View 1: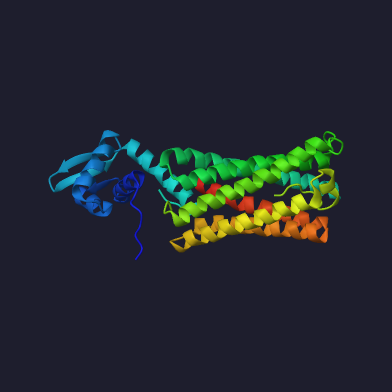
View 2 (view 1 turned 60 degrees about the horizontal axis):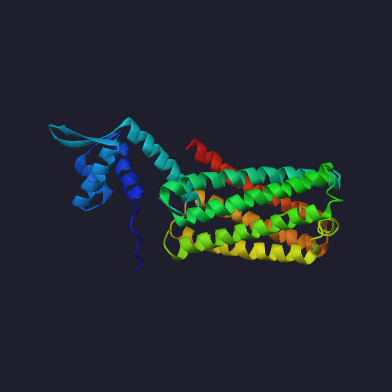
Length: 94
Length: 214
């Protein structure tokens, strides 16, 4: 049985930002949590890092919490996508 | 087309290939600082060596083809440049082979002397043994790179990674063609080998172009 190597921090950032970007830049907290495929406490840790860097902000709505991609976050996400594209060409990944 | 024109064309193609290799090295280096993936360090270093080597090769071919400088007369300089290219090329392939082996097994996920195999090679005083041994070494290294790359492909390759593997495959065929040229002492096979080498870098350039538009 093969065991995949743990995701890098950058890969987790990419997965979180990708999940928000795929929903048009604003996604439900629960949706991103399930897409990130991380334990809740670790998800919160990475989320706070992304918030500190100004890539994501948390919004409280009447029907639940949302995560919103900032302009800076969108630019960072685009760069990560390009980086991933380059790496995949050589059989690697983030 | 005269033989000298072919040599000049070969030189220009090598310079273009060198530029593509250096661009690839630069992008890999920039990303390696962010990602800290060791195979990316090997890719960056490998393309750097290959790029420098191809530029040395291109300069030598142009010097021969256009007649700039007295390359024919300054045999020592030509020898140093010729050997430098062959060494750089083989070290580059070795670096690729190590990088891909690490990625495949440890989970991180030429030419020159476009020299007519016989006559021109003698101008560079390389001797056919040095040239042939270098080609055999290149073929061995590239075979390892393609094998390891194939292993990575089997874990989930993409169209992009297949494009890069194709370019390494064409590069391998170019070295086989150059070795064959030396064996049959036919300069034109050497030129075909050079053209194939350029095609391989053109494929990498196509990849970089797609990346830049992504």
